Amino acid sequence: MPELAPFRRIAADLREAIRRGEYAPGHQLPSASVFVERYGVARQTVQNAIDLLRAEGLVLGRQGAGWFVNEPKMKYFASLTGSRTKRLEADRRRDTFTQQIEAQGKTARQVSTVEELAADADIAAHLRVELGTPVGVRRRIMYADDEPLQLGDSYYPLSIVQDSKIMSPADVVEGTDQVLEDLGHTPTRYEDEITWRMPTAEETAILRMVTGMPVGRLLRTTFDQHDQPVEVYVVILPEDRHVLLYDVPAG
Image 1 (tube, rainbow, N blue to C red):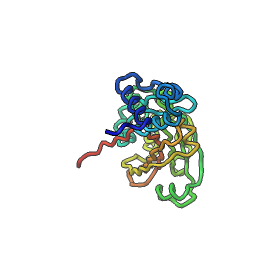
Image 2: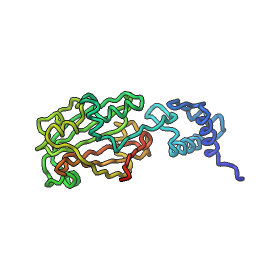
Image 3: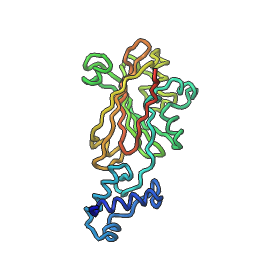
Image 4: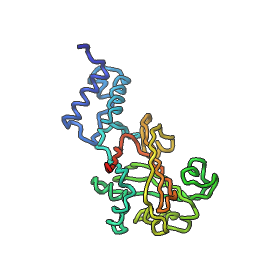
C-alpha cells in the first residue's frame, strides 16, 4: 500500500484525534507552527491538511482566531420555518426561528433593518409585480449564542406591509408570517429554490466566514390564501453551519 502524502497523514492523525475526543467540538486546534515542528514539514503542507479537514466539515476557521473543531451543524427545518401550527403554539410570543434555535440548546437573536426600494427583475418576477414596484425589505442577521448563523432578507409588496410591524426594525416577536395573517394575508404555501454559490465579500465579513467556504441560498416565495405571492425570503446559509431538513408527507 503506497505511503500517504504528508498532508494526508497529518489530516488522518487529526481526524483520529477528533474522533477520540482529544479535540472536542469547539476546541481550538494548535497553531500551524506546532504541526510544522511535530511533523517536520512546510507550513503549506499543514495548511493542505487543514483544508482537507475543512472540506470534510470537521474543522472551521474563525477570522483572526485560528482553526476549531466544528460543532454539530445547526438543523434548518426548512419545512417548518413557516409553520402556522408552531406559531400558534407559541401564542405569539416566539417566532419559529427562535423556537428552532432554542430546541437545539442555543439562544436566538436577530438584528433587523428595514428599507423601501424598487423591485428588481428577480423580486418582481417572484412577487408577480411590475419591475420597479415599491417593496418593503426587512434584512436580518440571525445569531445562535451570539455567533452569526445566517442572513435573511424578506421582500414584501409595500402596499401590503406599509405602516405595519414588518416595516419597523424592532423585533417582531410573533413572527412576520403572523403579521401577514393579521393583515389579511394568511400564508398557505411556499415555493423553495435552493442554490449554492460562493459568498460575497459583505456576506463573508458579516458571517465571519473563512475564504473558500460556500453558502446555500434558499429563496422562498410565500403565497396567501388567494395564491397571491406576499413575500420573497432570501436566506444565506454558510455550508459549514447548516443541515437543511425537509419533512415531506408521502401523500
